[in-house]
Amino acid sequence: MPDLFNRVERSWQLVEASWNVLRSDRELLVLPAISGVATAILGAGFIALAMGSGAVEALSGGHAGQVLGSFYAEIFVWYIVQYFIVFFFNTALVAAALVRLNGGDPTLKEALALAASRSGQIFGYPRHLAHHLLLDK
Figure: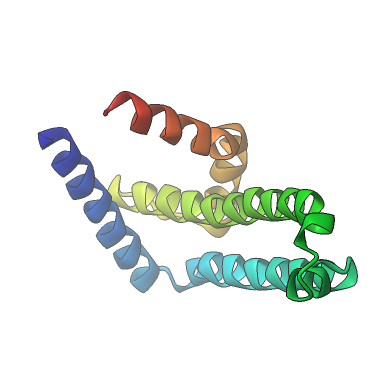
């Protein structure tokens, strides 16, 4: 349990550092803005896909069995892409916060480059998290 508290404390310190970086480096406000716009576009696209594929009508009409398999597959793909977008831009923001904490002057380009260099880890994070949650029981 002490390890959990240490993780929460470190996470909170990163949140505070990220907030301070955003206050001092206004150009980095673009990161959460892009993340928000991208997730909104993705959400709208998912809704349009669900409506266009007939999933909404089938679910509301009681014919869920006809579309559930493909609808669940669509939800899964949407979740993975949504997750990646959010964590990619959060990683970029944390990278900028770490540069600032180390005395540097982070730029948007550097923050995005670091997040891009970690794309594999960002994409694999749900598997990593699930593995640790299962082992910590």
